[in-house]
Image (tube, rainbow, N blue to C red; front, side, top):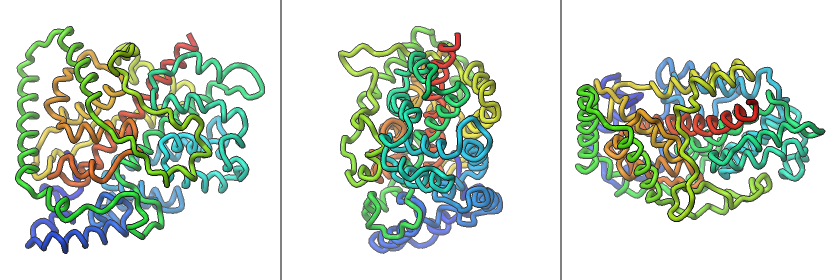
Length: 465
């Protein structure tokens, strides 16, 4: 699907380790723990993240360094996919540092509010520092109750966009825009909505890739325990190898069937979507939250118990499915943002397209592979768990291409990223490269952001008409 050091390209760190004689499991486990201890990710060995990895990666990392004054851990992990990193960085730079309706300190405060919804101490800490650097009042950092009422009024829509975006209505937009001392302008609100969805989805990336705080060198201070030697060995097993071959075969069959254009009725397509939506209920998640994550961010949270809720929960009235054709990013969302916040509309569109089309035509150890059906299945599954349905997509493909451990991972990272563990990261796609798992996280980040933005922008459009 991806990768920095695929067998088709010059050997990356993974090949150098994989081709030599294997060392004992215990020794390799200790070495992996040491590597993780000094790397930007608690999940990915440091040797597989570009420090100066290839000319183009290095160029993008330096570009990030120049604009932010440093290279953070998010940029280092995204550097596995330099084309995406470039697009992401341009968008984030515009959102935070270029002219726009909101003053700089309020942009960082909105980022703090958004990241706090997922208890993402990495992003909360980062933007508390940035907030102070651009002249924000230290008093506001004592908690949401110390911020101006205008910012506090964002709390409800922040909560809904983070966890249940399908509940956002034109009344929420109306309440924020109502004339008065603390009212928002439409342009300010659109910038705020983009910032909120950007940081909710970036929290998914941070947790999904096990991003560590900058300067954290001690492995013991991470909330992710190191893998056991047995877990280290598991990707080399025959079962993991078989997973790759089964996936390759299924992709091939689906592509052949598409060429033959086997007809499926609209009714059958709708039934398959509902089935997939209902089956996502069976994807479990842990209700355990690490209490250590809550102390420095609880002050920015109101209603901390509010979280993602399956809409197809048995015995409850499900909200209507969002039919993508009725309000698309291409025809509706993009043009609305472009009218109210011109440059960012263009950059968001580019970022969605870059990640959706990103491919190196590789899967695990295979080259020359068309991965489009797999990328589409991942994107559409993320939208499915947020209630968005594409009339022209056969959701039977999701079940054929995404094995259960991958679905557990996708749903956890997209819906409650703070519950992501190293174990669920290690359990899916056991024979794939880390850069391929990072690619999945990029698809998740962007699919999640687009889903929430579609709900928010649809509400704005309804308010305006």
